Length: 288
Image (cartoon, rainbow, N blue to C red; front, side, top):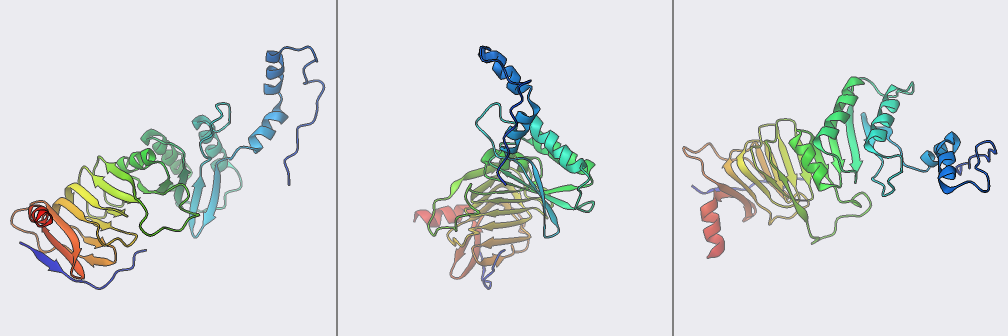
């Protein structure tokens, strides 16, 4: 049965010092290349200077939350930003005497372009938990990291690399779809500047916010928003559509009462409101 909904508009939401020239550590004029390299590696002041030139793990307080900023990926294999180095830096920051946060402060991880898998994300979460902190949300510009975060049950927002510098452009192309091959659990929110495809359920308390379409190959029982940047032509589709709330662009609606038999349905904007119809009827209307 077709169900029409019409609702009011909704508005979402000093230069670095060079190491001193220590003759006791400097190689002789006729030393081999390998000997010079060994001397450089054994020079702690040189190593410290090199480390000062490389971005480090940082913690920053902001509006009652704690931002954990990871250094970006570097192309130099010898650069001190390997995963082991990142873990060591994080532990040092958390265990230092300069703690400016309260226990149980939520932590927002700014991963930037760093590629992280589920195991690494869980390591960060466990390290924070040992310091009485909670990993709340992950921001990343890497699609693989966003997928790993979602599958591990963390709230995640995928951003374009320059999103914080460039205002959204009207009619801009969306990024590739984000595929989530797991159930979106309660308390998990996924934000993506494109289409989100969930191969599983979205439980009550779970949330999907996409600039493109939202497609759920399962039951949608949480909150879903398509066209979050204002595109009213986006769709929400699910095999079982019984959401807490759905939003498309500036329109908001709730699903009707549960039918006797569930079947795939599509929600889209029509005549100033959100309309929900059977997927088969929607496909037929689009082809006629």
